[in-house]
Amino acid sequence: MLATYPYFRAPRDEATPHPGSSPAPIALAHRGFSPDGYENTLPAFRAAAELGISYLETDVRTSRDGVLMAFHDETVDRISGGALGKISELTRKELDEVLVGGAERIPTFEELLTEWPRMRLNVDIKDAAGAALLAALIEKHSAHDRVLVASFSDARRLRALRRLARPAASSAGSTLTAVLRLLAPLGAARILARAGRFQCVQVPLRFGPIPVVTPGFVRSCHRAGIQVHVWTINDAPTMNRLLDLGVDGIVSDRADILVDVLKDRGQWR
Image (cartoon, rainbow, N blue to C red; front, side):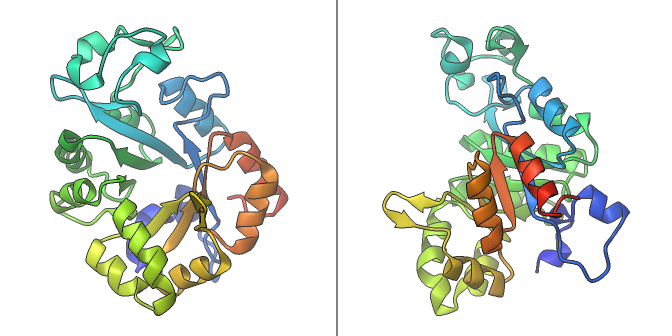
């Protein structure tokens, strides 16, 4: 199932394939790489690219005038240090004046999509309007092989996928992930993945007191051809433990640490 989705083959693997080898674990830079706090800005994404990262994780929200912005929060208050309001209440022009950490502006998703033509983008749709806008940009730039459509809302995610002329990769939303966690041991994972149009799950280590990333869960997903990506992991011991379990991807704020871990394990490409 995964073989039909080029998203899961990093650009390096496409250029220099390794016959008979399994894909290297995916290193996803969470909102780019910026220990100084300039998350979801072009300098943060650029810093991740300079580390050799091929996968960027980002979020998208819609401005008042219908522009898809690379931004996580519902409001700009946390990153701007002021009570400036919701993304949905501000125009693109007004958002250009909002500075992350007082220094960097909020980019549009289209800027990110076109800045690195081969970069893979893991995109979390944060609002209802974003589904159609994301699909339109994927179509406009023929980015079906580079974008993974994600959302905590399965309805929102599926709304975007249905608007695409050809398939793009996707990860399960919250509801389908919970169902998968319950049914995977019973052998229903493959059927659920096909019905829900997802090829991977992106999960935390635990949901409250319930462990999610267990050896059995990883095995059940792999038997069904589903990748397991874990967020948000920022320390080397936990990264190594998860890689020992066989997870397929790690989402991290510390892309530098993750790159070093993969290099030390001989799993960096």
